[in-house]
Image (cartoon, rainbow, N blue to C red; front, side):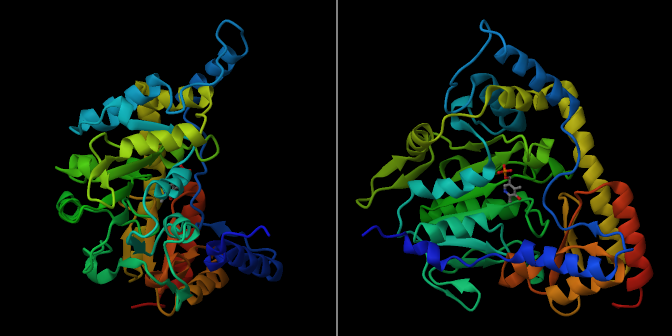
Length: 411
Ligand SMILES: *Cc1c(COP(=O)(O)O)cnc(C)c1O
């Protein structure tokens, strides 16, 4: 009798985005004349940078000719891409990461989800709340959690991100082995300082733990005193794995290219206490289960680091940050507590009542769609998330409507 992995039955069905779609549809049916503006989605809206498109086309042409055609490439990615990443994203910022510590992949979502395979099943995991759901769900699938009771899985150490701690979780009171951190944060938009990140690195070193650091939104950091990589923190190379993606940085959500950094002296332990290289384990996993990102996509990603590419991706994130600033300023001016939007495309707004009430009020009064914070975890209750991924014109109209109809709603 074939049996299933029953851990999958513990997973909570996420109705968040389908529930939002349902509410929007009902509203649109009842108000057919109202133009709806969506500021809820975590997907980019603007075209690929021209430098990437040119490199992409050129590589496709190479594939069209026998003399320049390429078949399977290295599973870990082509050297031309690994080398420029190591140089521009790390060495130029003082982080000593080498090209062979970079693993090119087709997404930070898959890497974030797959990495847990190389760790034991009975380790203790620490996961932020609110959170990008991938970290939690992939550990549920792997059997690292108990049942789901009152909005939380048994066996997980939740790292609360609250107004009281500035949305930077405090160190856990009980020992943990694997720690998920994401900065600039999705969904809150909060950003960690070097001092705060140093405390986590020190904790991991003292407790023989590993930090999984998701820096998918790094290109939105404008304050240069903030860390772009965890490897800018002393001692991090032994205890941290970092995830990056071209999705939000260069509009690659539909093109697919990302990378994971596993430093060679990053180590975890055997039951007998001996240490083992995580680089060799991840290399084995990656080469066994993955066959590389397509050549034209890697050439398009390489072009991100050209002079033109750098100017163009800066212009892209500047555009979204202008939207974010407008959203944040508008809600702040109306008296709502907000964070994010300065080094992040997300703005986290505290409302009155619960997340869904706020979502509902906004939709009905303004036709603007946000994401209820409760959908990202228990600590998201009472908040809504705005995303800056839309046109400036739409954001402007949305904020004018908010001003006109929410004035006096909140003191
Ligand atoms: C969008 C996003 C990613 C990127 O995922 P890709 O699979 O590379 O598109 C990773 N982490 C977080 C938190 C994100 O929001």
